[in-house]
Image (cartoon, rainbow, N blue to C red; front, side, top):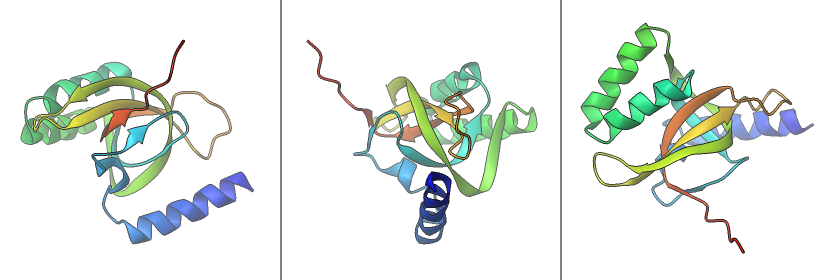
Length: 132
């Protein structure tokens, strides 16, 4: 039932928001279990950290690197944005335009396990957890 509900939500979101709108909300606060609709993912943390470095420099450099890394099989570019669940936060950072951004570890929403499936970047901040 959970998979059916997630699939239905994703279909509605894909139709209503054809671009990667969810990952482009500057005021989004990311935490484990959030749904990210992404057009680009990378296989490893090392690969996404290269993308993060490029994203701190320019949009053109980021897109160029994503294209090159997709040709090398290190990243994947989707024609239609696909949904993933946030597994954990890799690192917060500021992008080339000074906007708050995060690198996220993702898990496949169709898979019941909590293993890391891929990595992505998104605009937003990390949810502050109140400590002691």
